[in-house]
Image (cartoon, rainbow, N blue to C red):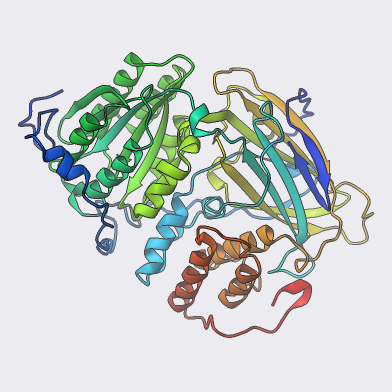
Length: 536
């Protein structure tokens, strides 16, 4: 990559140093697949809306081979290799990615005692699926805080593990701007299974309870044809919203391209200046684009995002082959998540609703400049499809990633240090650039960070846990970079990094590691002897 000297403007990002870490701060009703906005018999809505939200039935096995679900359909991009921390490769640049779909997909396969395809195991999305104990920025002017942590690498003696984490500013529900939401729902025949359209409907019912009078919701559906099921409707009119949700039915073929055009047109017509304007695509990923090519569809979404309408993609019943969903979300200044049960739905549409809806910074880019006097080689774990050229960092025409309210983004680097280097010298310089949600010019900050020589045993619980997730992902991918990591060791690191775990997310990872051990033919119950630097 070509290097270039970068000058960054001073931005609103508070910085403090704590311990060894750096902080900074409507068609006809007879159309197959759905029924329009019709009146229900008296009492029918009340009876339906009081029904408990039953968990979806256990999903069926995925097809064995490429098929409608896209299972095994996409070869994974090559893993990042070690790069020399000098010359053209001294600087590492990438766009942030808050997607978490990979973790949900890995979970589905392991619960079926199946090895996930390599294209499903995306390390950055697995790492970003977990909350960390990093504090939010200290004031409302800073879009996010940052933290750099360095400790021993647990799977390769002598190397160092570097964590770069960002945490977005929180936005309370009462402070959330008025929302103009258009749900684009796939009602084709493939959506009929319990973990697809029925789960979509249950998820939307959860969302309705979070809406306010000033919010507007519309529903567009697509199958063989597309149509406006519900015109923009106040969030306070819950009866009408629930009635439209209840009447959704699956059937027909898929024509996603026509649906997207109608959804964006609806969102633009109901645009709320200064508000949240977003299309939310709900599909199983069996997504063809009709008469448009994928490239034309991407250009359409890029064009619409300039109008202030962003795109979020939610996958239901997806088993893999989801690159189209990920790409569309990236092009639409949104993010991509997989909803595989009501717990995930509640997290995305209730607990983290502000993060799902409210963008606090767009086109966020990260650049790490390594000090060649301290670092011989480095490797970025994940982000293979988010890498940028060095010069793209200051090019405002180059797309970055988006961070929603309260979102967390983490990148891990494995670093091979220079022997005998001055420990007082900086290890790296971290540079960040971003735009305001409605801005076109980026601002940025930079901050140097050092390596205090912390051992893995003395690392934070967050780094210990993330090391377990990264190692587990590499083992599932059969990565040549896993070093001497084993599932037993990854379990030990996860146990050491459990922390408070109020929602049980980290405990769930422990269960998945035990399942991974069976799939990989390892003995997860075997207590490995402690290794150097806490690698037991």
